[in-house]
Length: 190
Image (cartoon, rainbow, N blue to C red):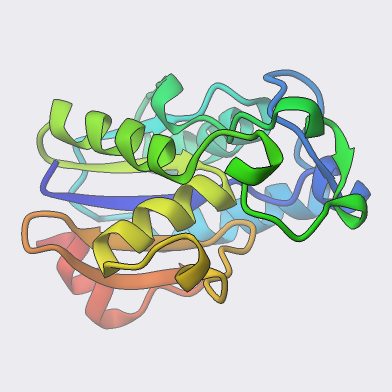
């Protein structure tokens, strides 16, 4: 891929309940989440696009469906942009999480997230929207910024936001933005 638009799914019942989960079913988008994604999608009309890829998790697929309708393009599911493997913390309340790294908690490693994203990026050409989740998006953004897991703790990827990377030139153009700037839109339309 020469460039990617990383979209975090819209608000889901999981976010409202403050739970983490890598289950493929359950935790659908809320009404608010659907509206957030519709707004983000409206900003993406007219961009040059080769495809839309989605995590297999329900909240990401529902986000992809909204984007697909707005852009009049089908989407595909790709397991490489799935939610983090959460181990024993799957379906766990965020408030009960110890302040340790994913790997220290027995979850999928930081490096694993980067490897699977890079595998997908290297396997396709053109520009794609990748609908995924906060932690995996933070990991691949950090890779392009030259940051590690602990160095990137301040990067917040909120629901229904877009982060844009010019992969070809290794430049991060935006991080977790719900408003796509004119400068970024100019790039996406070229």
